[in-house]
Length: 342
Image 1 (cartoon, rainbow, N blue to C red):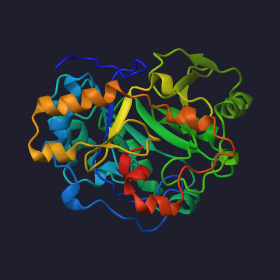
Image 2: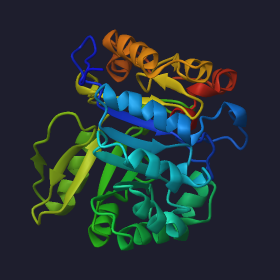
Image 3: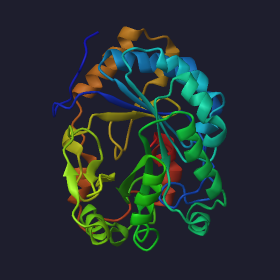
């Protein structure tokens, strides 16, 4: 098998997001706003051995960054065992996880010991009452405890993700910068996207990167952009005192032309783009007994034909609204962000 395959736009297959469960213990407005969902059948969920094997095949084709997602990944029983299996692969040089932090306090040390290198915690607000209204959870203190535990467990370069929504938390940008600074972390502000469960999305709720920078400049003065490699989704910036933060401008300034990431759902469906309507079933050949060569051939051929530019195409939609209606999501759970791993 050869390394570093590229798609039709010369984007390498380098970053893989692995959803380990479609279940979550929050009901955030931008992802899972409803109370009840159609869950993937438990028999359909990939085993740790199947996930490890798929990861190995992807790694032999050029993937070197792997991120575990959900749903909420810490709801998957015995997750450190899976981390240990993936961490043994020398081709994977960046093994990370995104979590809502509710269960991180109890598991951070075990995750670190198993070989997890980096953690990103979702923290949309510093106000417990806002989390209760927005995510239907009163466990804000558990998230903060998880962030502290991650630092104590030895996770460096801790990142905090905050989806910024006008009228909800757009008055907390500076507070989140200060909180991250105090916890040796870096906050990344994310423009509110019209994907998956964001069925109540509207353009007027999006706070653009430009607006965020203007808000922060009024508080901190001049803000300096930090040059990067062009592949990371976040553009990074530096305040005068050296404090850094990032902004993921997926709505107003898509980075499709350099996107090197794809995602595998908990039941083995491979999506080449966050906006893709359909995915590739990898579980069927996996359980049918396909060889590593056959799996690699399927992955290689699919990626080499990839032309996805979902966010760029959405940018050109007139009268843009939410990507899916609730009934459309109900018809196909794979369209949910908690299934395909955001």
